[in-house]
Length: 284
Length: 326
Image 1 (cartoon, rainbow over the protein chains, first blue to last red):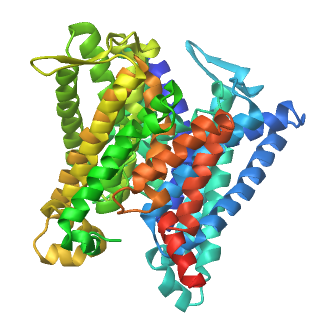
Image 2 (cartoon, rainbow over the protein chains, first blue to last red):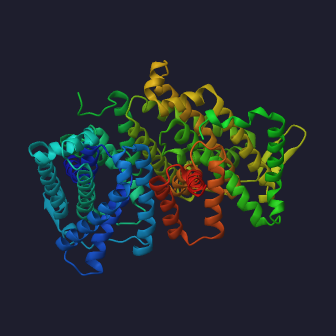
Image 3 (cartoon, rainbow over the protein chains, first blue to last red):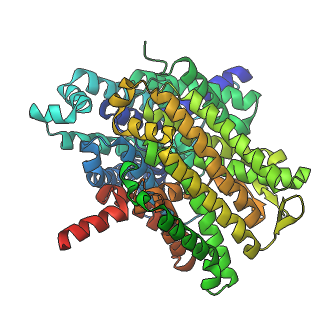
C-alpha cells in the first residue's frame, strides 16, 4: 500500500510544482522572457497571504485575493522599470535585472516580515482525508483541482482567443507587431502581471503545506526550472505533465532513496534530459 | 572601451611599464599607507579576494556576453577543497590550489558540455540550478562538512623549497591576496589579446560574422566558461584560509549578486572595472554598513539601476557627463 500512498504524495507534490510553474511557463512560452525573481515572488506571495490572515485578520479566500492584487501591482512596477530592456530584447541584462530585483525583494521582505519561519494558518491543510490506508488533506485536493482548472483556462485563452495570438505575435517580433497596431508594451505588461498574480495564487495554495521563510525563494525556484525545461519551454500541456511527473519521481525518490537529495535528483533528471533532448520533452 | 581601441598607450612601452611598476608598488603598500591597522589589512585582503572572485564572472559576462549564475559553485569548490584537503590530509597551499583548479575546470567542463546544445537562457538556468543543488549536497553531506561546515582551517602554508611562507594573520595573507590579484589581472589582460578573447568578443558582438569565419560559438562558450571557473575557485580557496572556516554559507546569493554587480557597476570590458567596483561595494558593506537586510537592498538596487539606466556603467555615465559639460 506504500506504493499507492507514494502515488498520492507524488500527485500532491506535482500539482504544487505545476501550479507554481504556470506563471513562468506563460512568461517564457508566450513572451520569451525569463524571470529569476520567480522564487522571491513565490516567497512574497506566501508572506502576503500570511500577513493578510494573521495581521489583517482576513479569511483565507480574501487573503488569496490580497496576495494576488499585491503581487500584480508589484509586477506592474517591475515590468515598467524593465520595459526598455524588454522592448530592445536585451535578454542578458534582463536576466541579471530580475535576479537583482529578487535580491531586493528578499532583503525587503526580511525587513518587513522578520527572519523567523512562519506557518500559514490554513484550516484545509489540517483537514485530513483517510481512504483506507491512504491519506491526504483537503488542501491537497484544492491544489490539484485549482491547478487543473488554471491550466485548462490558460490553454483555452492562449490557443482559442484572439488575445493568445496577439501575445504570440509580440513574442515573435515586438517591433513588427507594433506595425500591425498592437501595443507591445501593454501586452508585455499584462503577461508579466499575469505571471506575478499566478505565482501569488500558487504560493497562497501551496505554501500552507510547509513553513515559510523569507530566504526560501532561492531554492524554491529550482523545481520551477525543471518543470519548465522538462515540459518543453513554454508548452502549457508539457508543463502540467512535467510537473505531475516530477512530483511522482520526487515522491518515490524521497521515500525509497534519500529525502535530503531530492532537489539534486531532480537536477540530475534535468541534466540527463538536456543531453538527450536539448529542446525539452514536448518538442518533436 | 573595447579591446581593439585599448592599445593606444602601446606606443610608449617603457613609460607604460614604469607606470605599471609604480601602481603595483603603491598597491602593495596601500595597507601601510592607510595606517597599517588590522582593519586596513583585512579590508584590503577581502577586496583583493572578492575582486578575483568577480573576474571569473567578468570573463564570461563582459567578453562572451553570457550570464553564468553558477560561479558561486566554483567559489565554494575552492573553499571546500582548501578546507577538506588541508584539515583531513594535511596538504599545503600549493596542493589545495592545484586541486581547486582541477576540480573547477572539471565542474565547468561538465556543466558547459551538458548545456552545449541548449538555448542561451538554459545555460543561465542550469548554472543557477547547479549552485543550488551543490548547496543542498554540501549542506547534507557530513563527510565534507555538512551543515556545520569545517572549523579551524590551519594557516596557509606555501613551501618554496628553501623556506615556507605562512599566512597566519591578515597581514601575512595580504601579499598572497595581492599576488593572486596581480596574476588574475595579468591573465585577464592576456586573455583580452588572445585568440580566444577576440573570438569570444566576436561571438558576442556579431554572431553571424563569427559563424561565417568558421568559429564554433559553442566551443568558444565552453572554453571561456572553463577558464573562468578556476579564477573564481582560487578566490574561494584563499577565502577559506582568510576566514579559517568553510560552510554552506559560501553558496549564499550574496556572492552571486556581488559578482554580477561588480562586473557591471564601473563598466564592462574595462580591465580594472571589477576591481574598482568591488572596492566600492566592500567599503560600503564593511565601513558604511546599514545592516544585513538593507545591504541586500542596496546591492540589488545598484545592480538593477545600473543595468536599466546606465548600461555602460559609471564610466559611461562619466563620459556622458563630460560630453554634456564640454
